[in-house]
Image (tube, rainbow, N blue to C red):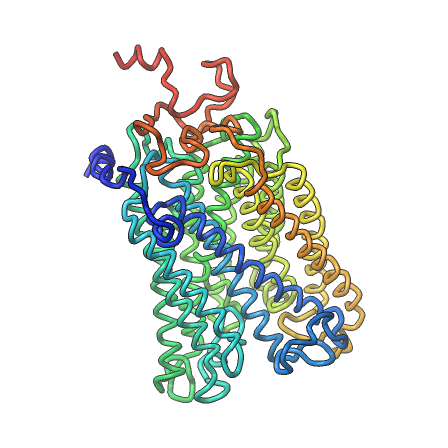
Length: 584
């Protein structure tokens, strides 16, 4: 079916009719409402994941001191002296699981994928609106199952977010250890939700682009979401299969990962990281697309090397499938195989470097507007570069053998995923908030939040490189019990205080969202003078997105400072007389 025919067929979804409260706000099939639902679910989960991070940092800095205000918590989870070891294991397991699977993915892919794809390609809605609704509610059920594990006997999962076998495959409390089981069930459900979304995204982008919206006229954020959907479609079945096998080992008496019955623990690592490394780019590719759109808009320049940027994302996606073994350099793999993984991991830095230099090329001699979204997008680039450079070190087998399972790895992953993904999330929320909710966020509060977060983030995570080089291990709950780590304890205290400031700064962001929803300045149709199609729709868009006909596209998405018009922007949908004459 051609894209024009698909748009015509999809017109059946456009006719407006009054819906009740539940069909409008709860069980909605409107892609915009589903995007908002993913956003608020993820912000709620982020508060829980962030709280666990604060508790972990308290334990690491003040292991002999009770956490203030937590005297009401039952003894299995807290005691005088801070946090018990098994509770600490549960906290770092659930912190990472929640932040990766229930915060970054739902916001970058669920929220902005749903909200932006139809609006930016000129479609009235997603290809399968009911499947779209189902994808959110299955994801919400997955989150509920994950949180319910805090209330079962034995507590939540405590085997790390990677849940390496055989530790994760043997019930700690035989017959009642349901925390790890619920962890597996929750992620299986989340995988099903993500597969529904991926099918919808791919179908919508391939079949429902408006007239003139060729692939190489799509904004880079849509390119990134399209490639991410393909990665999800291919990677999630691997994780789902591995989780099912792990459940069979735990509940069914099988021995897929248990050596006692002839199983192979390394099989879990291979299956997990074959999914896990594409997953890293599932979390960073949408952030790259967001940064590209925000940087071009506030530089008032066309994106430098648009096609190179699109091809670089395709290259990253392809290479992400052949680097998973660098997570297993210490597993005893053949040195020749390890060398091949080392080389492919270094090669994947090349398309990432292309994107970085293209962002810098876009900024060069641009008329840069340092808005809150722009500051967060620039921070994304800087933090991603730092995280990428430390990743090159870890790609080298001899270096990785030394720093593996130290705080150097913790620093690296947080520079990529907090410094990368979360700064891009802040940029995206502030940039598209006017279109999502029809009101502007407070710019002053946005900048205050950015600067406190930026400084506190670097004070929190950069010193972790020093801890790692000093031999400070990951996943230990009381570093003061090790004599050789005692000289590093002042750094732990500094990191924890910085982390508390970082956590407190997020209340500013939350307050800005709440205040802006209720009292923010009413947004115009195009407050940023941007070029892409979503800014031609009302703020917020109504049912069917556009009043009247869907706009036609005449050019690419980044025609800023064009000599063809007096303004410094030329929207994709504006038909110029010269174009009309040429068509005649």
